[in-house]
Amino acid sequence: MHARAEYIGFTLVALFLAVAILGPLIQPHDPLAQDVARRLKPPGYVDPRAGPFWLGTDGLGRDILSRLILGARVSLLVGAGGATMSAIVGTTLGLMAGYAGGWWDGLIMRIVDVFQAVPFTVLAIAVAVTLGPSLRNVILVLAISTWVNYARIVRGETLAQRNGEIVLAARVIGANDLRILLRHVLPQVAASIIVLSSLLVGSMILFEATLSFLGLGVQPPTPSWGNMVLDGIEPIRVAWWVSFFPGVAILLTVMGINLAGDWLRDALDPRHRAL
Image 1 (cartoon, rainbow, N blue to C red):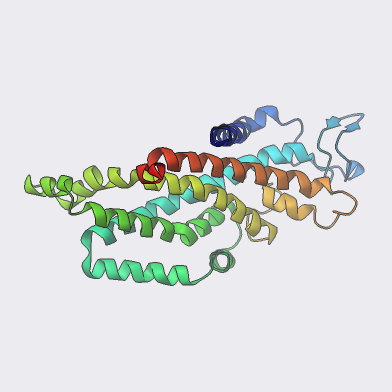
Image 2 (cartoon, rainbow, N blue to C red):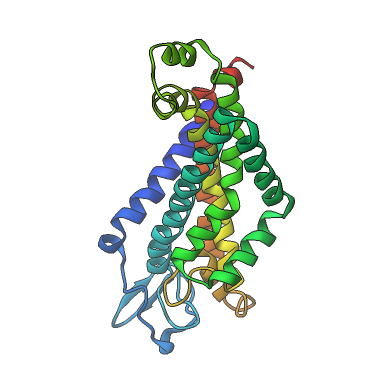
C-alpha cells in the first residue's frame, strides 16, 4: 500500500507539472476569452463556432479547462516560489542561530517565537492586506509566514552538528566559519530542508487558494485555482462545475505532493525510516 501511495503521489506531481509547463500548447481555448452567450454551460457543451468545452464554462463564458491549465502554472509557481524563498530565509537564520549561539541564537529564536504566536492564516492575511494583492506579493506573504518552520528545524540540526568531528576537524585545519557552514554543516541538514519543502509546497498551494478566495491573492483576470473556486460560489446552485473542478485540482495536487513528501521523508531521514 505504501509503494502504491508513493507511485500515486509522484504520478500526480508529474502530471500537474507537465500541465503547467505545456499549458500554452494544450489549452483548447483562450483562458481569458469571454462570451456571455455561452455563460455557465455544463461540461461537454459544444459551441457550433468554438467547438467543445469539456469542463463547461464559467459566469463570463470562459473555458474552465483552459483556465484550470493556466491556473496550474500560477498555483505551482506560488507553491514552489514561496517554499524556495522561505527556505532561503529560514535556513540562513537557522544556521546562524545554531552555529553562533549566544545572543544571536536568543534574538533569532525570540523572533521565531513571536511569529509562531500568531496563527498562520491571520498573519498571512495581515501581510497580504498590507502589501496588496498580486502574484508576487502572495509568494512574499507565504515566505514571510512560513520561514520559521525552516529556522527551528535547521537550528536544531546545526546545534547537533557544530561540535561534531567533521566541524572540529575543519576548525583545526583553519577553515573559517562561513566555509564550515557551507561545506560541512549545510550538507548535513539538507535532507531535512528538502523534506520540509516537499511538505510545505502543498500547504502553500492551499493557502494561495485561501487568499485568492478572500480576494487577497492572485487577481483576475489571471486565473488561479483559488479565485476560480470563488467565481463558482455565487452560481453554485445552478452551475456546480465552476468551483468543483478547480477544487478537485487543488485536492489532487496537494495529495500528490504530500504523498511524495512522505516518501522523501522516509528515503532521506534514516531516523524515521528506522521506525
